[in-house]
Image (cartoon, rainbow, N blue to C red; front, side, top):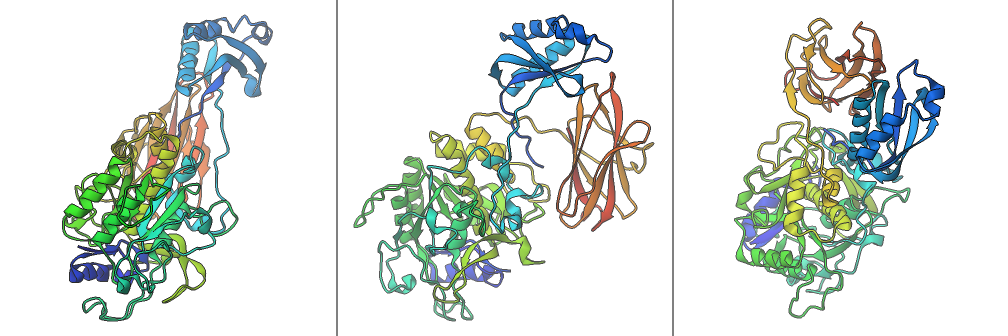
Amino acid sequence: MSSTPWGRAAHRLALGVLVGATLGPQAVLAGGPGGATAVAQASPTDRLIVKYRDGTGAAAAQRGLLHRAAQDAALRRGVQLTPLRIGVFEAHVMRLDRALAHADVQAIARDIMASDPEVEYAEPDRVLHPQFAPNDTQYGQQWHYFEATAGINLPEAWDKSTGSGVVVAVLDTGYRPHADLAANVLPGYDMIMDTFIASDGTARDNDARDPGDHVLAGACGGLPLQDETSSWHGTHVAGTIAAVSNNASGVAGVAFNAKILPVRVLGRCGGYMSDIAAGIVWASGGTVSGLPANPNAARVINMSLGGGGACDITSQNAINLARGRGTVVVVAAGNSNDDAANYSPASCAGVVTVAAVTRSGGKAYYSNYGAKVAVAAPGGEMLFGTADGVLSTLNAGATTPGSDTYAHCQGTSMATPHVAGVVALMLSKNASLTPDDVAAKLKATARPFPSTCAQCGAGIVNASAAVDAAMGINPPPPPPTVAEVEPDNSLGTAQAVTRPVSIAGAIASSSDNDYFRVSVAAGQRLTATLVSNIWSDYNLYVYNASGTEVGRSINTTGAPDTVLVTNAGGAAATYYVRVRYYLGLTGGVDGKYTLSLN
């Protein structure tokens, strides 16, 4: 079997599959240049905030008389509670004798409220941290990392892991020493034995740099039908995984403190499976006859490549050996809009097979699918503009290497390195995870698809939740999802819902308004978050029981809207949450949105 990159330029997507089918024993690249956010886990804290009802004697509270019930509640949980000060809103800040998990401090707060009727509310004094955002100049275009609709929830993950100490092997066309990548690249190897495919004048050697894979019309068994330029595919894939970040230049990598081990297995017309299998074995630290030992065994292998046909024996044996050494093998599902079971290595046992979603979170038109797919990640879809592709490092040369550049690309090749990077984040926090552990946690923490993606795996990979799972932090259960029910166009016809809830709604027309009625207990906070579809801008409003506006969010298209309202009264209160059309598309399909009430 032969393999080629799954995708390349938009006009090369179908061509890559034909190359693999024509050449027989060779493989294809999986992408290239061309055509509901999880709740964060709160940090441990050693402090509580207790607010007594208005009219309670401040002097008595300062003498500790009113704190007796609070201290008794803490003692029942095995900790001591000491008053510190009276803070804003006349709320009392109290210190525990040791830090506890947020859930445990929450339990103490509930006990305090239950045991003392003078307490208006009690809650953990949470410890917050700055959320890391790199200063790379083009990071704002990397929607695939941070957008609420189809992003992988990466900024939140970066607060916990950046991939330090993990080696990720990229089996691809090699790499270019791009200024935004080279510092994270280890010495690799060129596995290509055929000098025509290698295009660099030599057979297998220790130079993994990409000389270019441009090809003349008809050079690959009658294909391609016209001359094709070099793809620099491996450089784009490697940049998504570990581009140098926070360097005030270019783009950011998913695991920017991980290291890339480049293993060149694809060249002109693709690459032979025998060379790819040797690359898998060598990258994972195994022995390949005639090659020096690999001093930097990879814990993760990324293969954004594939070809037609079920998994072959050679590929499976190589993957088994890598897995036996603890290496997680992440592969592209393929770009043929077909069942991944019909392609290799996507159909091999023990690999993490990745499908591609668009910026709206639905299946990319080209992506393979099926039972072999584990998870999905952003692969982009540039039918309506390059900005909807995946941005990473590239080279400007049409045939031979030119200057450094950046480009938006689409393909399952682009989706796969997102997942490989997330695996590096996970292993950096817990190196004892096995390949099966990693696969299970990726699937268990994936978030639901915001748009249709049938047979695309467990969901869109969620970097932050996956890192939490690697660290042994159990995610909170997802809120139930309910459908919006008309008529709900006014306060009087508002749809009643119970928190927490995720509402799947749609703006039917530009005059449509959707209202939802929710009860908030005394002292509790309502957090309303609206995620519109990527083509529309809907606004979010919150009203009290009298119909008076108490909060609004009117962010621009593509940005989620959030409103926070606290019920400071002494009894439960009713609030109305309104979704209002501002601009963009409407209708049952094009006007979809998700409203979360927590």
